[in-house]
Length: 353
Image (cartoon, rainbow, N blue to C red):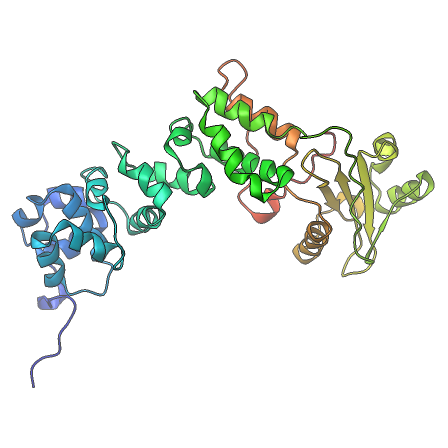
């Protein structure tokens, strides 16, 4: 019987062919595998259009023989190459977009992100009309809701992760305030912005209440919680937890804040909710002496608040102010707090807004 087929040709002592400095520079982590398919001086690979070279790098991660990859990228029609890259799906304009990825090959994870975004027709339309595509752009686009991934909005997006995250959060809150059926309407309004300043100010405007006079009652949390309803109880809770809750007596009395105590669970906790234009917001949750809570306790609290109609995250007032600062040369730059972990994204600790 013949020798079994292997995905990559076997080299003596497991060594690959020689790689020229140019290939190392252009191909990076892909250079070793490419040097097997196109040995030094790699003329066959270097002569390919840049779109075909990027296609070869993408296909290296697929379950294909190396000689099959070589035949496809050297002699396959654009449509056939594109279908291989998109796992059989039609992908008009993909090869042309690949030609705009630059001369240096990307990391596999960035290629995966590019293809994932290209599989969405709205985003693909943007990529087809982008003169120069870079991984940093794609990582910013991915952070936006799909309805905001349109040319008229993307052209006004600053090259800032914080600004993009704040715009995405503003859209989420605007839809929460108006209803999911109004999401497309909000996005279309933002498309009419003629500048970055106008886009971000529109987003801030949409964080204002739609109607005045609607006074939302505090959330009705499960029986594991009890709500502080008078000054005497507030003072007792403040003494038990040794915190500054009594400083907020006026806010609680005016209905701007609600305080609850988690009495059933692994640990006791006190939490404060602020009334916000986008709904009651979990503003703080602490144990005795303002100690941090265990993750399981915090998750129990968050689940209870959200199930009762409350929310977590940034204050709409703070977010609206920061949206303007992101694009205003006089007011900015905006300070964006660290929010990499789940706990940080809850944005707890904002009690005074």
